[in-house]
Image (cartoon, rainbow over all chains, first blue to last red; front, top):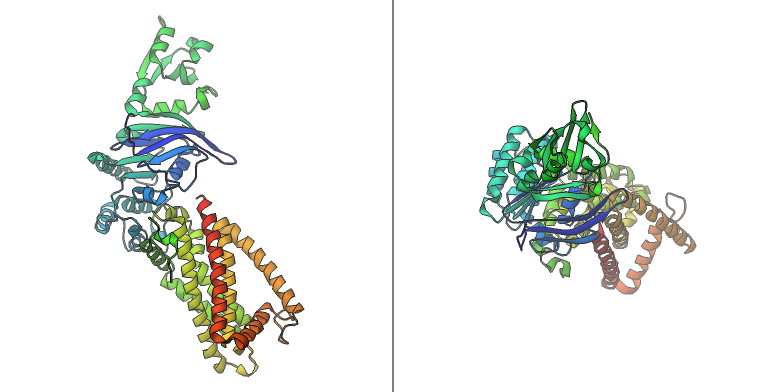
Length: 300
Length: 248
């Protein structure tokens, strides 16, 4: 990521809570790209998003959004961000139309006509009280609000949860369309790796508050591979070549980030190397602890 | 009225301030307003002839109108949504104070109007609340409402509605105890409250009456307004400072 003026940049960001700490998170997102933020529940994804919005103040490091510090210039930053919370909560006694009228005009670039058009397209009943709408429809409403003010950065926290597959796919296509002009960027967190596979240009993987991966999707997929072979191949030395390993009666399957080293180590032995999917990378990387230390092999 | 510097800063402009006030009014739906006012009028029928209870009801109405939206937002969990909008925290605080001042005015008018309408209709011969339907009674009402709002908001903005309400309740009880003790020590008027001892409102009422006698209406109002303005200025600054540190 060599963009000298990324739309979003985190450097050494940390935040400590009583039972959880986010440590030394660094990544940047250039304009015109989509970054998928992935990690298990409680990994720190929402904390990262909240720090970008200045809802939470970092204890360490620095965050720049549009070159601005959100803790000092939060309003200027938030004016250019379209945000969808993982559990979108608006004033439930209001209709979708009134709720949008209550929050939309805070954005200097709010486009009422665009909102109405998006709400219609997303199937959000404008006269329906928000409390009567399903979680999925409230998420659609939040997406319509987030997309209706020409935001430069879309921050979507688990936007696809609660959405049906057809709408989810349409949303992903729309996100791909949003960045076409090259000025907008999207950061969205998701558990669904197929969504990231479809549209993400960058992948940032956080686990237990530690940044494990932040690269282009191509780099992630090119660097990683699945290796299958007999368990007898696994020695103390060869195990270190794997990010994560699953063993069973059939043998082992391991994810490596250094295929050539594995080929050298297993030279002359019988083994298979397959391309890794994003799902594989997340699954196997998630089986290791901070700093890449293997917590345990996962046996099946 | 001079707009505080908070409202003139970028992102915290007057337009944002008015938009916030409009948003708060939208959240306080017409149906909810009817509910609050309905409860007030029904309770008025029971308390209008009961001295301190009617005074307390008026204070409760002012408090309910001032904190209705913060309670709704806390209950519905909309704080993260609100603070993800391009609004300064200080402007949110300022809007809530301005609304509280205006709704307190509305509560005062409703309280006095209700009292004046109901007292002649009901058995007014044994009703002492008529003493509140006087200038010193109304001034006393606004002094108490001002104290209530100026105390509640910093606690709420520092601790949130859940813990803040408990702390505020504790502080209120402590202040009431001090008020009763002071009223008792001061000898107070012969009138006794629901606890069988002179209530603090009686002490304030008699002091306001004395001020009106010595300073006249203009002098008393000026003094009271300056006092309340200073109290609100300190309260507002504390609220803005504490709310700026809150995380959502």
